[in-house]
Length: 172
Image: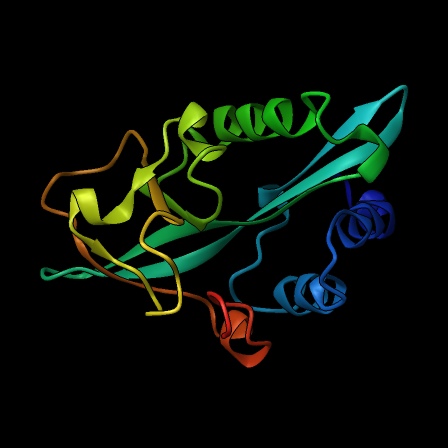
């Protein structure tokens, strides 16, 4: 995403969700330590932005050391373009772009029917603990990248923005 595309990408993400707090989350993430401009991607059709996905930095509290990891959230596609492959193409393209980065893992909480097509697996299968008990086990997923080592395991610590805006897991 180019810096001049921010407002449109933000609007696409806000439109994609029923959650009125997505815009606030994106703004707070963009101002936080976890944001890196190169980790925000857009999908365009006919030069019009129709999708947006963001990766932010997080921490894995592994037994040997703290490890810088990524969190994929949020992924949004404009409502009139949903179910047309835009989200899948956007995620695949973004994952290709970050494949050579130094972070060994990408975490997310999302649909266990949607994300496995990109290689995501349940986090607990590789020894990871979700950052909240409110995240359903099937929704807590991880994608190992090139620098992943099997000795890496432990608890994922989300950026503070997710906590301050109560954007972690499900509420009863």
